[in-house]
Image (cartoon, rainbow, N blue to C red; front, side, top):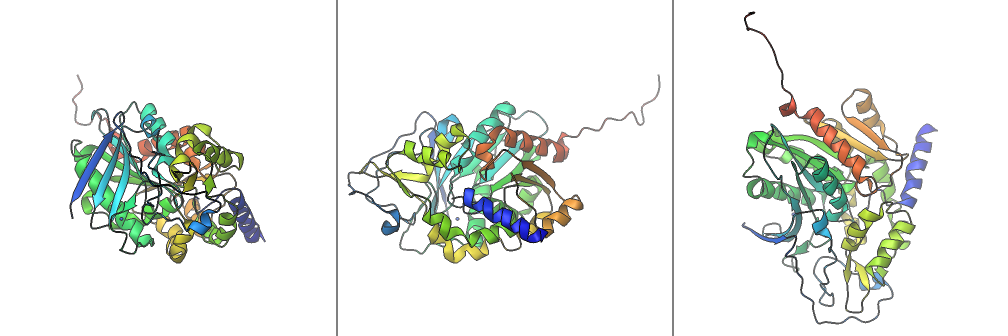
Length: 392
Protein backbone atom coordinates (compact mmCIF):
# COMPACT_ATOMS: atom_id res chain seq x y z
CA UNK A 1 0.00 0.00 0.00
CA UNK A 2 2.83 2.38 0.84
CA UNK A 3 4.39 1.60 -2.51
CA UNK A 4 1.15 2.40 -4.32
CA UNK A 5 0.81 5.64 -2.39
CA UNK A 6 4.33 6.64 -3.34
CA UNK A 7 3.58 6.05 -7.02
CA UNK A 8 0.35 8.00 -6.73
CA UNK A 9 2.18 11.01 -5.30
CA UNK A 10 4.84 10.83 -7.97
CA UNK A 11 2.35 10.59 -10.81
CA UNK A 12 0.27 13.34 -9.30
CA UNK A 13 3.22 15.68 -9.23
CA UNK A 14 3.78 15.01 -12.93
CA UNK A 15 0.45 16.67 -13.65
CA UNK A 16 1.66 19.88 -12.00
CA UNK A 17 5.07 19.93 -13.61
CA UNK A 18 6.71 17.79 -16.19
CA UNK A 19 8.82 15.65 -13.88
CA UNK A 20 10.89 13.91 -16.46
CA UNK A 21 10.29 15.56 -19.80
CA UNK A 22 11.20 19.03 -18.61
CA UNK A 23 9.23 20.04 -20.73
CA UNK A 24 26.74 14.98 -29.47
CA UNK A 25 37.28 16.06 -36.16
CA UNK A 26 38.05 19.56 -35.53
CA UNK A 27 36.66 22.01 -33.06
CA UNK A 28 35.89 25.48 -34.42
CA UNK A 29 34.79 27.75 -31.59
CA UNK A 30 32.90 30.94 -32.33
CA UNK A 31 32.90 33.09 -29.22
CA UNK A 32 30.44 35.85 -28.46
CA UNK A 33 31.31 38.16 -25.60
CA UNK A 34 28.44 39.41 -23.50
CA UNK A 35 28.57 42.90 -25.05
CA UNK A 36 29.07 41.73 -28.63
CA UNK A 37 26.10 39.40 -29.17
CA UNK A 38 24.23 40.05 -32.40
CA UNK A 39 21.75 38.24 -34.62
CA UNK A 40 20.52 38.31 -38.20
CA UNK A 41 16.90 38.22 -39.24
CA UNK A 42 15.69 36.09 -42.09
CA UNK A 43 13.28 37.61 -44.59
CA UNK A 44 10.92 34.67 -44.95
CA UNK A 45 7.42 34.96 -43.60
CA UNK A 46 5.05 32.57 -41.89
CA UNK A 47 1.28 32.66 -41.91
CA UNK A 48 -0.91 32.46 -38.84
CA UNK A 49 -0.07 29.54 -36.56
CA UNK A 50 -3.03 27.82 -34.95
CA UNK A 51 -1.61 24.49 -33.83
CA UNK A 52 2.03 23.63 -33.44
CA UNK A 53 1.25 19.91 -33.71
CA UNK A 54 0.16 20.38 -37.31
CA UNK A 55 3.55 21.91 -38.08
CA UNK A 56 5.47 18.96 -36.64
CA UNK A 57 8.00 21.59 -35.66
CA UNK A 58 11.29 19.95 -34.72
CA UNK A 59 14.80 21.12 -34.08
CA UNK A 60 16.38 18.70 -36.53
CA UNK A 61 16.91 21.59 -38.91
CA UNK A 62 16.19 25.27 -38.68
CA UNK A 63 12.97 26.33 -40.35
CA UNK A 64 13.47 28.89 -43.11
CA UNK A 65 10.41 30.70 -41.79
CA UNK A 66 11.93 31.36 -38.39
CA UNK A 67 13.10 34.84 -37.55
CA UNK A 68 16.44 34.78 -35.72
CA UNK A 69 15.24 37.33 -33.17
CA UNK A 70 17.61 36.17 -30.46
CA UNK A 71 15.35 34.48 -27.88
CA UNK A 72 18.30 34.06 -25.56
CA UNK A 73 18.54 37.78 -24.94
CA UNK A 74 19.59 38.27 -21.35
CA UNK A 75 22.05 35.38 -21.21
CA UNK A 76 24.81 37.92 -20.54
CA UNK A 77 23.34 38.77 -17.15
CA UNK A 78 24.43 35.34 -15.94
CA UNK A 79 27.26 34.22 -18.22
CA UNK A 80 30.36 35.92 -19.57
CA UNK A 81 30.37 34.34 -23.00
CA UNK A 82 28.23 32.45 -25.45
CA UNK A 83 29.96 30.15 -27.89
CA UNK A 84 29.13 27.97 -30.89
CA UNK A 85 31.19 24.79 -30.95
CA UNK A 86 31.21 22.94 -34.25
CA UNK A 87 31.61 19.18 -34.10
CA UNK A 88 31.43 17.49 -37.49
CA UNK A 89 31.90 14.14 -35.80
CA UNK A 90 28.78 14.71 -33.67
CA UNK A 91 27.05 16.52 -36.60
CA UNK A 92 26.17 19.32 -34.18
CA UNK A 93 26.69 23.03 -33.67
CA UNK A 94 26.60 23.14 -29.87
CA UNK A 95 25.50 26.31 -28.12
CA UNK A 96 27.57 26.81 -24.96
CA UNK A 97 27.30 29.40 -22.18
CA UNK A 98 30.39 29.97 -20.07
CA UNK A 99 31.76 31.93 -17.13
CA UNK A 100 35.43 31.42 -16.28
CA UNK A 101 37.14 31.78 -12.89
CA UNK A 102 38.31 35.34 -12.39
CA UNK A 103 41.45 34.15 -10.61
CA UNK A 104 43.25 30.90 -9.99
CA UNK A 105 44.26 31.34 -6.37
CA UNK A 106 43.50 28.75 -3.71
CA UNK A 107 44.01 25.01 -3.61
CA UNK A 108 40.79 24.15 -5.46
CA UNK A 109 38.77 25.83 -8.20
CA UNK A 110 35.29 24.34 -8.61
CA UNK A 111 34.17 23.83 -12.20
CA UNK A 112 30.44 23.25 -12.57
CA UNK A 113 29.28 21.64 -15.83
CA UNK A 114 25.49 21.57 -16.23
CA UNK A 115 23.21 19.35 -18.32
CA UNK A 116 19.53 20.31 -18.59
CA UNK A 117 16.54 18.01 -18.92
CA UNK A 118 14.38 17.13 -21.92
CA UNK A 119 12.49 20.09 -23.35
CA UNK A 120 14.62 22.64 -21.51
CA UNK A 121 17.85 24.51 -22.37
CA UNK A 122 21.18 25.58 -20.93
CA UNK A 123 19.62 28.83 -19.72
CA UNK A 124 17.62 26.84 -17.19
CA UNK A 125 20.82 27.19 -15.13
CA UNK A 126 21.34 30.92 -15.78
CA UNK A 127 20.16 32.22 -12.40
CA UNK A 128 21.91 29.38 -10.57
CA UNK A 129 25.21 30.14 -12.29
CA UNK A 130 24.88 33.82 -11.40
CA UNK A 131 24.34 32.88 -7.76
CA UNK A 132 27.36 30.56 -7.78
CA UNK A 133 29.62 33.21 -9.27
CA UNK A 134 28.38 35.76 -6.73
CA UNK A 135 28.73 33.51 -3.69
CA UNK A 136 32.20 32.34 -4.70
CA UNK A 137 33.37 35.83 -5.72
CA UNK A 138 33.96 34.66 -9.27
CA UNK A 139 36.39 31.95 -8.15
CA UNK A 140 34.64 29.15 -10.02
CA UNK A 141 33.73 28.12 -13.54
CA UNK A 142 30.20 27.56 -14.85
CA UNK A 143 29.36 25.90 -18.17
CA UNK A 144 25.89 25.12 -19.52
CA UNK A 145 24.90 24.08 -23.02
CA UNK A 146 21.87 23.29 -25.14
CA UNK A 147 21.64 19.54 -25.72
CA UNK A 148 20.88 18.10 -29.15
CA UNK A 149 17.34 18.90 -30.19
CA UNK A 150 17.15 21.84 -27.81
CA UNK A 151 17.67 25.59 -27.69
CA UNK A 152 20.20 27.08 -30.10
CA UNK A 153 22.11 23.85 -30.73
CA UNK A 154 21.55 22.84 -34.36
CA UNK A 155 22.27 19.96 -36.71
CA UNK A 156 25.01 20.49 -39.29
CA UNK A 157 23.73 18.10 -41.94
CA UNK A 158 19.95 17.74 -41.70
CA UNK A 159 20.04 14.86 -44.17
CA UNK A 160 21.67 12.66 -41.54
CA UNK A 161 19.11 11.11 -39.13
CA UNK A 162 19.37 12.46 -35.59
CA UNK A 163 19.06 10.08 -32.65
CA UNK A 164 18.29 10.80 -29.03
CA UNK A 165 19.41 7.63 -27.29
CA UNK A 166 21.05 7.92 -23.91
CA UNK A 167 24.30 6.95 -25.64
CA UNK A 168 24.02 9.92 -28.02
CA UNK A 169 23.60 12.39 -25.15
CA UNK A 170 26.52 10.77 -23.31
CA UNK A 171 28.82 11.08 -26.33
CA UNK A 172 27.82 14.74 -26.68
CA UNK A 173 28.62 15.45 -23.03
CA UNK A 174 31.96 13.63 -23.27
CA UNK A 175 32.86 15.75 -26.29
CA UNK A 176 31.91 18.98 -24.53
CA UNK A 177 33.71 18.14 -21.27
CA UNK A 178 36.87 17.42 -23.24
CA UNK A 179 36.43 20.62 -25.24
CA UNK A 180 35.93 22.70 -22.10
CA UNK A 181 38.95 21.10 -20.43
CA UNK A 182 41.23 21.61 -23.41
CA UNK A 183 40.09 25.10 -24.40
CA UNK A 184 38.68 26.88 -21.36
CA UNK A 185 40.52 25.29 -18.45
CA UNK A 186 44.00 25.06 -19.93
CA UNK A 187 45.26 28.02 -17.89
CA UNK A 188 44.12 26.40 -14.64
CA UNK A 189 46.62 23.94 -13.16
CA UNK A 190 45.19 20.42 -13.39
CA UNK A 191 45.85 19.88 -9.69
CA UNK A 192 43.45 22.75 -8.88
CA UNK A 193 40.56 21.68 -11.10
CA UNK A 194 37.57 20.27 -9.22
CA UNK A 195 34.89 19.28 -11.73
CA UNK A 196 31.32 18.75 -10.59
CA UNK A 197 28.73 17.43 -13.05
CA UNK A 198 25.24 18.74 -12.35
CA UNK A 199 22.23 17.37 -14.20
CA UNK A 200 18.54 18.15 -13.97
CA UNK A 201 16.03 15.37 -14.67
CA UNK A 202 17.21 13.66 -17.89
CA UNK A 203 20.44 15.61 -17.51
CA UNK A 204 21.03 13.94 -14.15
CA UNK A 205 20.81 10.54 -15.81
CA UNK A 206 23.20 11.59 -18.58
CA UNK A 207 25.76 12.97 -16.10
CA UNK A 208 25.56 9.80 -14.00
CA UNK A 209 26.07 7.40 -16.90
CA UNK A 210 28.84 9.58 -18.41
CA UNK A 211 31.24 9.18 -15.47
CA UNK A 212 32.42 5.68 -16.38
CA UNK A 213 33.30 6.88 -19.91
CA UNK A 214 35.54 9.77 -18.81
CA UNK A 215 39.26 9.58 -19.48
CA UNK A 216 41.53 8.68 -16.57
CA UNK A 217 42.73 12.29 -16.39
CA UNK A 218 39.21 13.71 -16.21
CA UNK A 219 38.16 11.12 -13.64
CA UNK A 220 40.95 12.40 -11.38
CA UNK A 221 39.59 15.94 -11.75
CA UNK A 222 35.99 14.92 -11.05
CA UNK A 223 34.94 15.30 -7.41
CA UNK A 224 31.22 14.65 -7.66
CA UNK A 225 27.91 14.31 -9.48
CA UNK A 226 24.74 16.16 -8.46
CA UNK A 227 21.31 15.08 -9.71
CA UNK A 228 18.42 17.52 -9.50
CA UNK A 229 14.89 16.14 -9.03
CA UNK A 230 15.22 12.79 -10.73
CA UNK A 231 14.27 9.37 -9.35
CA UNK A 232 14.33 6.39 -11.71
CA UNK A 233 11.03 4.84 -10.61
CA UNK A 234 9.19 8.16 -10.84
CA UNK A 235 10.76 8.93 -14.20
CA UNK A 236 9.74 5.63 -15.77
CA UNK A 237 6.18 5.96 -14.42
CA UNK A 238 5.93 9.57 -15.57
CA UNK A 239 6.78 8.66 -19.15
CA UNK A 240 3.46 6.82 -19.30
CA UNK A 241 1.66 10.16 -18.86
CA UNK A 242 3.67 12.22 -21.32
CA UNK A 243 0.91 12.30 -23.92
CA UNK A 244 -1.46 13.99 -21.47
CA UNK A 245 1.19 16.55 -20.61
CA UNK A 246 1.92 17.30 -24.28
CA UNK A 247 -1.76 17.68 -25.08
CA UNK A 248 -2.27 20.19 -22.27
CA UNK A 249 0.85 22.29 -22.92
CA UNK A 250 0.66 25.05 -25.57
CA UNK A 251 3.43 25.15 -28.14
CA UNK A 252 2.59 28.55 -29.62
CA UNK A 253 2.26 31.94 -27.88
CA UNK A 254 1.70 35.45 -29.24
CA UNK A 255 4.87 36.76 -27.55
CA UNK A 256 7.79 35.65 -25.37
CA UNK A 257 6.24 37.56 -22.48
CA UNK A 258 3.00 35.62 -22.71
CA UNK A 259 4.95 32.35 -22.81
CA UNK A 260 6.70 33.36 -19.59
CA UNK A 261 3.44 34.33 -17.92
CA UNK A 262 1.74 31.05 -18.88
CA UNK A 263 4.54 28.96 -17.36
CA UNK A 264 4.45 30.98 -14.15
CA UNK A 265 0.65 30.88 -13.90
CA UNK A 266 0.58 27.10 -14.36
CA UNK A 267 3.31 26.42 -11.83
CA UNK A 268 6.01 25.26 -14.21
CA UNK A 269 8.09 28.24 -13.08
CA UNK A 270 8.00 29.62 -9.55
CA UNK A 271 10.79 32.18 -9.84
CA UNK A 272 10.08 35.09 -12.19
CA UNK A 273 13.73 36.17 -12.36
CA UNK A 274 14.73 32.72 -13.62
CA UNK A 275 11.70 32.36 -15.88
CA UNK A 276 12.38 35.62 -17.74
CA UNK A 277 15.62 34.08 -19.06
CA UNK A 278 14.86 30.35 -19.12
CA UNK A 279 11.42 30.32 -20.79
CA UNK A 280 12.12 32.48 -23.90
CA UNK A 281 15.07 30.19 -24.69
CA UNK A 282 12.56 27.38 -25.28
CA UNK A 283 10.92 29.22 -28.17
CA UNK A 284 11.72 30.64 -31.60
CA UNK A 285 10.06 33.71 -33.03
CA UNK A 286 8.48 33.59 -36.47
CA UNK A 287 7.78 36.40 -38.93
CA UNK A 288 4.14 36.37 -37.87
CA UNK A 289 5.36 37.61 -34.50
CA UNK A 290 4.33 34.44 -32.70
CA UNK A 291 6.81 32.28 -30.80
CA UNK A 292 6.89 28.51 -31.27
CA UNK A 293 8.36 25.92 -28.95
CA UNK A 294 11.68 24.66 -30.32
CA UNK A 295 11.67 21.12 -28.99
CA UNK A 296 9.00 18.66 -30.04
CA UNK A 297 9.13 16.13 -27.22
CA UNK A 298 7.24 13.57 -29.31
CA UNK A 299 10.37 13.31 -31.43
CA UNK A 300 12.07 11.59 -28.52
CA UNK A 301 9.42 8.91 -28.04
CA UNK A 302 11.42 6.05 -29.70
CA UNK A 303 14.31 6.73 -27.34
CA UNK A 304 12.58 7.20 -23.97
CA UNK A 305 13.20 3.66 -22.79
CA UNK A 306 16.98 4.21 -22.99
CA UNK A 307 17.05 7.24 -20.71
CA UNK A 308 16.53 6.05 -17.14
CA UNK A 309 16.82 2.27 -16.84
CA UNK A 310 19.33 1.35 -14.14
CA UNK A 311 19.84 4.98 -13.07
CA UNK A 312 19.41 4.58 -9.31
CA UNK A 313 21.87 1.67 -9.05
CA UNK A 314 24.37 3.50 -11.25
CA UNK A 315 24.10 6.64 -9.15
CA UNK A 316 24.60 5.02 -5.74
CA UNK A 317 27.62 3.05 -7.03
CA UNK A 318 29.41 5.95 -8.72
CA UNK A 319 33.13 6.08 -7.85
CA UNK A 320 32.80 9.72 -6.79
CA UNK A 321 30.78 11.86 -4.37
CA UNK A 322 27.04 11.98 -4.99
CA UNK A 323 24.36 14.57 -4.26
CA UNK A 324 20.63 14.24 -4.89
CA UNK A 325 18.37 17.28 -4.53
CA UNK A 326 14.63 16.60 -4.68
CA UNK A 327 11.64 18.92 -4.82
CA UNK A 328 8.61 18.82 -2.56
CA UNK A 329 7.08 15.42 -1.91
CA UNK A 330 9.32 13.37 -4.18
CA UNK A 331 9.94 9.86 -2.87
CA UNK A 332 12.92 7.58 -3.24
CA UNK A 333 12.75 4.23 -5.00
CA UNK A 334 14.05 1.05 -3.37
CA UNK A 335 17.62 1.40 -4.66
CA UNK A 336 17.88 4.98 -3.44
CA UNK A 337 16.32 4.16 -0.06
CA UNK A 338 18.91 1.45 0.56
CA UNK A 339 21.70 3.74 -0.65
CA UNK A 340 20.53 6.52 1.65
CA UNK A 341 20.43 4.18 4.65
CA UNK A 342 23.96 3.08 3.83
CA UNK A 343 25.10 6.70 3.52
CA UNK A 344 26.13 6.37 -0.11
CA UNK A 345 24.99 9.84 -1.14
CA UNK A 346 23.89 13.18 0.26
CA UNK A 347 20.15 13.85 0.06
CA UNK A 348 18.62 17.34 0.21
CA UNK A 349 14.90 18.13 -0.16
CA UNK A 350 13.52 21.57 -1.06
CA UNK A 351 9.88 21.68 0.05
CA UNK A 352 9.17 25.04 -1.58
CA UNK A 353 10.42 24.20 -5.06
CA UNK A 354 8.85 22.83 -8.19
CA UNK A 355 10.49 20.37 -10.57
CA UNK A 356 12.86 23.00 -11.95
CA UNK A 357 14.89 23.28 -8.76
CA UNK A 358 17.74 25.21 -10.36
CA UNK A 359 15.26 27.89 -11.45
CA UNK A 360 12.81 27.98 -8.54
CA UNK A 361 15.41 27.84 -5.76
CA UNK A 362 18.55 29.13 -7.45
CA UNK A 363 20.16 30.54 -4.30
CA UNK A 364 19.50 27.46 -2.16
CA UNK A 365 20.75 25.22 -4.94
CA UNK A 366 23.92 27.30 -5.26
CA UNK A 367 24.60 27.14 -1.53
CA UNK A 368 23.99 23.38 -1.52
CA UNK A 369 26.40 22.85 -4.43
CA UNK A 370 29.06 24.99 -2.76
CA UNK A 371 28.72 23.04 0.47
CA UNK A 372 28.89 19.78 -1.53
CA UNK A 373 32.12 20.94 -3.17
CA UNK A 374 33.73 22.01 0.09
CA UNK A 375 32.72 18.82 1.87
CA UNK A 376 34.02 16.43 -0.76
CA UNK A 377 37.07 18.12 -2.22
CA UNK A 378 40.15 16.93 -0.33
CA UNK A 379 42.14 19.78 -1.86
CA UNK A 380 40.34 21.99 0.64
CA UNK A 381 41.60 19.91 3.56
CA UNK A 382 44.76 21.13 5.22
CA UNK A 383 46.13 18.88 7.94
CA UNK A 384 48.38 20.62 10.41
CA UNK A 385 50.60 18.65 12.71
CA UNK A 386 53.37 19.28 15.18
CA UNK A 387 54.77 15.81 14.67
CA UNK A 388 58.54 15.78 14.64
CA UNK A 389 58.90 19.33 15.90
CA UNK A 390 61.16 19.70 18.86
CA UNK A 391 59.93 21.50 21.94
CA UNK A 392 61.68 24.73 22.78
